[in-house]
Each structure stands twice: as structure tokens, then as C-alpha cells.
Length: 173
Image (tube, rainbow, N blue to C red; front, side, top):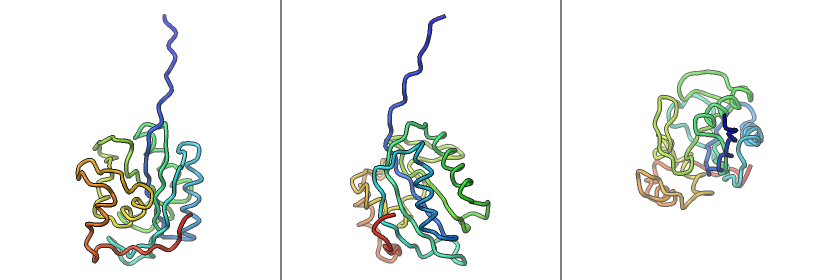
């Protein structure tokens, strides 16, 4: 039998959205970024934004940020790794759009487009979420959404003012 050596996986550029609305929200964003270090090399971090609640309004306000980086993990492996990080940081199951100490979403993964029961890339709700688009525009304004054909900067600029309800609260995290 031939000796087969696995080829190293290439690095893939990714952007991840982080949000928290329980406890020390900023500390949870920082802890999540640090916990990713073995799996994701973070090259940029956005400013931190606070969001008036979009889906479920009877809970504390969210802090939101986006990190850009590289990974060698496949998309599903990255998803499961991020979910384990959330649990390790204390995330407990609640209801959809409920309160949480940390949530990490994959916004994009290279030029991959995929849809499974567990994962959609680019993120399925990104276009309606100013709290993901504004921080994404801080660090990836020229990234082109593959189905919209517009850059993140163009998507933010086209957003009606009444839909842009995020407030920048920190320049970095």
C-alpha cells in the first residue's frame, strides 16, 4: 500500500459576527475572540456597536462586533468549533433570538456559498442586520456579497436610515 500524506489545508479568509447581551458584554466579546485563537487567526476587529433590539425587545441590549481572519477548518468544523466556544463561555439554550452571553455567526467563508439545515454561507440574515453590516463595513467594506453583487459599503449606504439603529460604543475590542 502506498504511503499517503495528507496535504495541509489552505487558509481561508472568514468574517465572524459576535454578539452578547448578558453579563459583562464587552468581556464576553473579548473572551470569544481569544478562545478562537487556536482555530482562527484574527487579522482585524471592528468597532463595537450597541443595537436596539430587532427581534425580541424585552431583554438587555446587545453589543455587536465582527472579526476578520483566516482558518484552516472546513465550514462545518468551524461552525461546530464556534458552538463549543459559546458553550464553554457559558451560553445556555434559550428561545430563538433570546438573551445570551455570546453568539458567534459565520458571515462569510472565502467565496463559499452553501445552505444546509445547520449552516448557510453567507449568513442568511446578514442583509437585514445593521448590527452585522456596520461592523463588517469597518473591516471588509469591499467584500462583495455573492448574491447581491454589492460591496458591504454599498449595502450599508443603501440601508434606509430608519433601519440603521446601531450606535458605535467603542473603537475596538
